[in-house]
Amino acid sequence: MNKKLSLVELSSYLKVVSDPTRFLIIKLLERRTYCVCEFVEMLGISQPAVSQHLRRLKDSGLVLEEKREQWRYFSINQTSPFYSIIEELLKRSDNGDERFKQAIDKEGLAQC
Image (cartoon, rainbow, N blue to C red; front, side):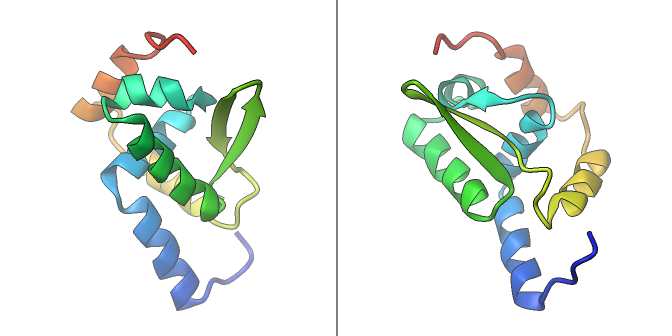
């Protein structure tokens, strides 16, 4: 990232990714694109809760949304000015984390 961020920008961004569920969503999106209904199944939380987390991530520019018919799919925004920070955080995150492993175990169970 070449652009320097103001303290307000950086702290605002860090608030978004400091939520464990949102960071888990980012970690999952590192693997591939997911539909909202897949996150509901994988995370074991309600659709409105998943949508709120995704909205925060999208509003911060960290994820991209693509509409396909009635479904919404999300992916990491690699052009975000924050992407290099995300990349570094993901490198430091534990793939053996229990919540991450539980989510991966439920991957593919949702029928979108």
